[in-house]
Length: 195
Image 1 (cartoon, rainbow, N blue to C red):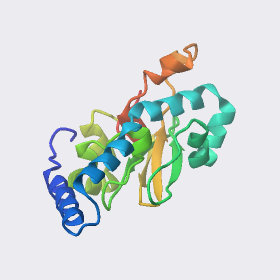
Image 2 (cartoon, rainbow, N blue to C red; image 1 turned 90 degrees about the horizontal axis):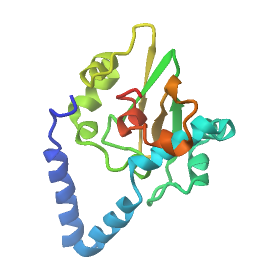
Image 3 (cartoon, rainbow, N blue to C red; image 1 turned 90 degrees about the vertical axis):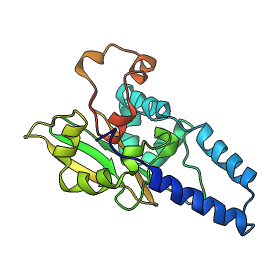
């Protein structure tokens, strides 16, 4: 799944929109590039990994994160930016529940916490199939979810973005927060991988 989809169609649509904005004088090309660069400069999967590592080591923070992700990540300096306010919901994987995130309409995604979205996340195949056959799609990523584990698919939108709080590996309880951060992958934060 992860290597079989091109994002060329999406790239063409984005470029067409940029051209229209420039042609109509709404924004200059250089200004658009600067805005995109500034937006992406502080965006990285490392941010989401830091949030998860804090939740694993600080039970009070974890409780706040699961209750109100938007406020909790702001405590760590990761306030949602952009023109439209976005709510962040963090959903926790457990021994009995596995969560996976998708945006069926486009590719809404918590960029500040996960970095630019991977091309497979934006692909029509992922967006349409993961809601219908999540177990099969996750298997294509190399993740075999046992039959006794319930899979919940969360559909992001322009108003609400989701991030998965992965299940902490049992052998990591003596590790400090910085070492935990290095274990956490973007795919685990989306739910297409386990740690």
